[in-house]
Image 1 (spheres, rainbow, N blue to C red):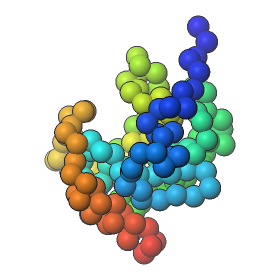
Image 2 (image 1 turned 120 degrees about the vertical axis):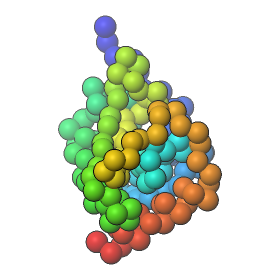
Image 3 (image 1 turned 60 degrees about the vertical axis):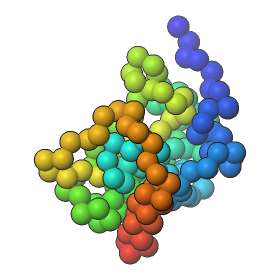
Length: 144
């Protein structure tokens, strides 16, 4: 069965076009990183390509490489910003794989020993909390 077509009205495409708000953390020519509005931990960040890709199954090698470069940059900043001991990174493809938004994205989550992730579909975070977490990551990015 051929993969479904990319839907340009998905929520992440709308964020990229500025039609929906997002707490942006990092942006370059190829990717955007922004705070997950239903974070599974403090600092939970999403990394997406700026060009259309439904998921890892139809993304180009260039899109995948760009996303992973940005994910690594964000992960290093999260360790510093949140005093984390590790990182969990996930990517879901297609409904059966757990994908909900059909634009390629990686979840990058700073982790602390002994602290479990919040359940999937956690409540939406307050805007001011997301802004504060994003500011911490952006500051860590500046510091290198």
